[in-house]
Structure formats: C-alpha cells, structure tokens
Image (cartoon, rainbow, N blue to C red; front, top):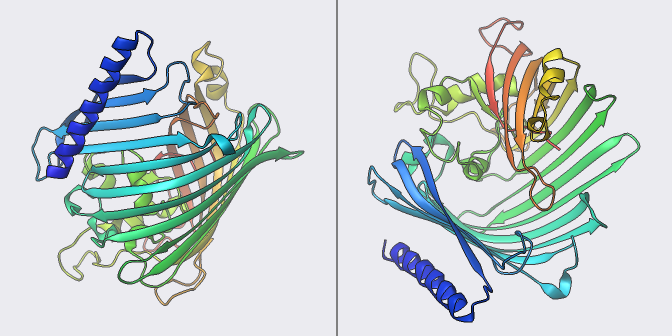
Length: 415
C-alpha cells in the first residue's frame, strides 16, 4: 500500500509542478487534462476516481510526453481500496516520421486484483497519409500476477503465479482488388518458475459487394506449451481470460451482472470464437467447490493448449439497417449490421488435454457499433451483438437445431 500512496503523491506533485511552471512561463508547455471517473464492480462497489491525460498543447495525442493515468477509490473499501493505472509514451524522434512513429511505452497498474508493470518498444510504418494501410511491430516485457481471485468473474480461469513475460507482436493491414485484410501475429515466453511459450496468428478479410452486402472471413490459430497458466489457454467460444483485462466491462465481476455472465448467454468475442458453445464453456468455468456434482460441474475448466478456427459472416440487406444508417450525423459514428454466421474449430492435438474432433455452429445475428476512431484511424468504441446459434455440430443433450440466444461484446472482424 505504501508504494501505491507514494505513486499517487508523485503524480499530484508532477501535476502541481507542471501547472506552476506553466503559470510562471505564461506559455503552456505541457497540459494535464483531468476528468472525473465513475465505475462499478462487485468488489470495489462504486469506484470513484480521476483520469488524467497529459500532452503537449495542440498535439492531440500525437506528440511527445503522452500520459494516460487514472486513480480510483472503491467505496466498499476492499482489502486494497485504492487502484491506479499509468501509461506513458515517448516517441523516438530519430526513428519517427509522420504516421510512422517509433516509441517507448511504460505501463504500471494495480487494479481489480491484478499487477501489470512493463515496458515496450513500438514501431509503425504507414503508407503516406492513409492511416488504414500500415504495419506495426511491438516488443514488450512485463511482470504480471493476480493477487486477488475475488475480482475474477470465473476464478478457475486464473492462476496466482508471478509471471515475467516477453511478447513480440506484428500487425499488417492493407487492401487489394478483393477487399481489405488484416494480419496479426504474437509470440511470447514466460520465464518464472515453470517456463512456457505461446503464439497466435489471426488473419481477417472483408469483401464488400454493395453497401449492405459483403462477406467477412477470419482464421485464428493459437498454440501454447504444457504448463501454460489457464488465463492464457484457449476455449472454443471466447477470448482467453487474460484478454478480458483490456475491457472495463469484463475486467471484474459485477460490471456485467454476475448472474448474466454465469447464465451462458453472454459471449466475449475473440479466440476461436465458435460462439454457439458459450453456454457449455461457461458451465465448465463455474466454481463448484467439489470435484464433480450431480449437475456435471467440474473443477477443471474446458480449456486446451491449441486451436485452429474459421469464422465467416455474410452481411445482407435489412430495412432496419438501411433506415438506421441514414440517420443524419448519428450514422457517422453508429452502424447497424445484420448477418448470417458460421464458425468451426478444432484443437491441434499438441497436448493430452486437447480434445479431438471439430466443433461447428451456424446462425444469424445483429450488431450495433459505436466507433470514434483515434488519431491513427483505429476503432475506438464498442460493439454489441444479439445472435442466435441455430445449429451446433455437437449439441450434447440438446437438439442440433434449436433456437439459442447470445448477447455479445466486441467483434472478431471489426475493421
């Protein structure tokens, strides 16, 4: 706790120094833009705080000395009532030019029961003034540890191990005669205690036949070695648990009501994303307290070390979408889609815990998205989906054809 309060005190001293220095100079050389913040989860209760954006005036998130910080107090006063997040980005001028910045990023956070402290190097190459066509490379080192399982929506998906991680990532986005494509690859090593490695590759493609007709394709592959912590393992239907930390709605239990999450009707996009299996996967994630009971609930969640999946979505004309997308001004930021989908996946059989055989689903869905792009043109907002997986290849005790309902957060093919 002493380190937390020392860090808080340092942030406010820095703010005081900048403001007083600018007042003396009468010409602002740096500005801190505060804003109040209010959130909720079942452990902190109502969480009140302050967010700070730091930048050189007039640079609009594209200049030197970029700061994004926040500090919060949980009004239910849990064991660690104060949480914080700090991210600082400093461009490397010698390796940067317009749209093709190189930068160093430092991150430190203690919030929702999780430590994350690291440093990384990022480099972007952009084609001219078109921010849609780019390549990016990143190399990041971090120390991470979950120190409280109380915040986790599904504690079985988390270890309490300290982890020292090194990750390399690459992303390419461009277009050709058939449409737009995006390629992402990551590879990582964990060094402490039992070392393990993991890697993922994601390839997405979007072809538009008309304003309301098109097809979106995605291939996802992930692999990890034995001994990998459960938060980095793969499920059939959703993103790995570690990626839930990147979204305020899924970072801690209770922001989305826990009964909703445990119902199996809430899906978080990502990973293999064979969405029709969400209910069965969530059932295996629940804590039972005993090895197995009469409902079939089990201690070990249904996760595996490798996966290969295909996701396909066919956009089609819908009068509601046409009317919605013609609303003046609002349609520039909000959009509505109607689509048919098909997902299929299988494990690669890397370890004994990987199941054999393929699992598939098909159905129909609708989505609404809010997008206010950042200064690089990347999506910044949210996607809400309502989907009906009408067919499952392995339905268990159910019929293969059945009306099922899902509410989804995020999209796997969003560009």
